[in-house]
Image (cartoon, rainbow, N blue to C red):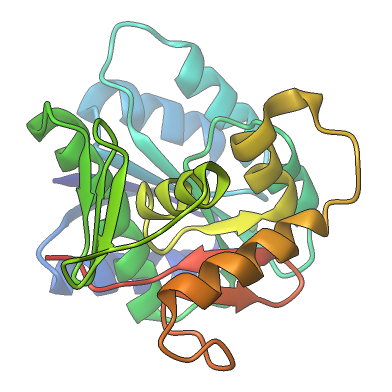
Length: 231
Ligand code: CA
């Protein structure tokens, strides 16, 4: 697995590189947007960790240009942002990034996100049947059956779709707006807090303790994420 790290602050870039190399990923560093585009064309990496604030071409521009090319394999793009900075722009618009991480982040969190991206890629390539599995849950999309620890869950269509969205991408943080897009598409006009209502109902059906959720975690100020160990 080849990972390209695009970050102008060399200390951060090296920290990321060391973290990922400890996990046996092979990494290259590019210190600005143009270097990133060159490295992308030459090395065709599987994952690009892309800082938003870069001198010259910024992360969004780099992301757009990478998504516009058609000759090379599409990489997974994990965007890095500073806390509060531009975060709405990254998650609100369709930037072409697959996920984002807010600085400062722990090495453990970074590795978890990269692994989640790669799991997603394996699932898409390796399975014809539409089944998502994590340690405790199974979701069969063809048969529309969800189970937790082998016991079938009684979910509404909306709750199923919500769980499907979460399980399609364990560890990813979803904003309410993104969940609304997934659940209702673009025809939704209303209070985005409606998401919280459905999360509450889903938690009642899947969480051992709804006061202290194990699987659907609230990410304060952003939204929700689903966590369950992978198989
Ligand atoms: Ca930067």
